[in-house]
Length: 237
Image 1 (cartoon, rainbow, N blue to C red):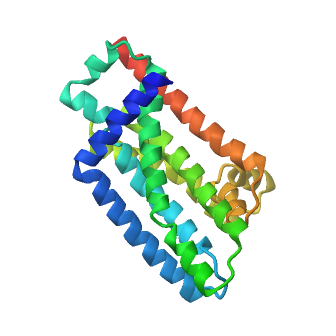
Image 2 (cartoon, rainbow, N blue to C red):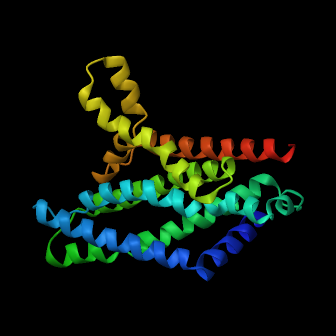
């Protein structure tokens, strides 16, 4: 765990020494403010559900771009071989990079904390729903980052890796839309279980189900395991 934390600190330094983190923060807060305003204008209830749904979709596109350089850039600059010969374990390397991106996402979510405060000043929001919404966004971030890391481990070009991560995630999002147009019970049930929207919606209502939490955790772990397998296979080429 100590090795993973060392990698995490190094990655955070790289983020904040480059314009990437600040650009990401600016775009995220701009979108959050826009979605918050839209949510207030179309809903009579003091909540952030509309903002959260749109932000989760935005993160699906933004987070793979954040993680696109994690391994692809290492190979492009020639430092990947040095990492493979370092005393760090592969899991420590992957977890450190994943944790750095996740901590940056936590910082971004903290930047939107004043929106619930605005709601509490002018009304009486459901704090259970707000806490659940933020927890759902955190789970989404965990999942999206893991898929982005896997794409970056597979593709050598950073921009292509970012696009690849988005393409990996899109079916899990669109399956939630597709179920509305299907009548077949088996296919409909399968797509519903595979959908981000299906597992994210209860959080926005303040319902924290262990099944939904486990789904996001398993999704995250599966892509981290695939990332480990991808890098391990490259080590012996």
